[in-house]
Image (cartoon, rainbow, N blue to C red; front, top):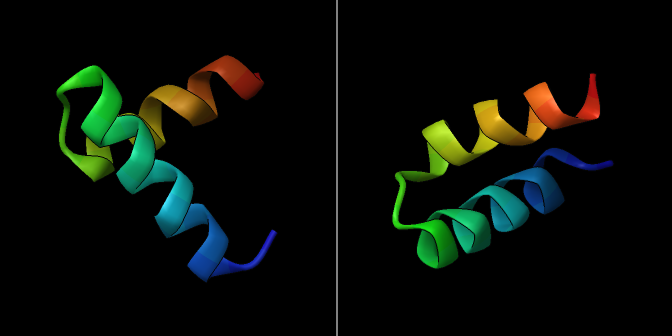
Length: 33
């Protein structure tokens, strides 16, 4: 995954879940584990 794609996904999850992108990114990393 490119960093741009990761930021896009994190931003999208942030919009959907109501969290900031950074928090959504941590959530995604946690789920991946």
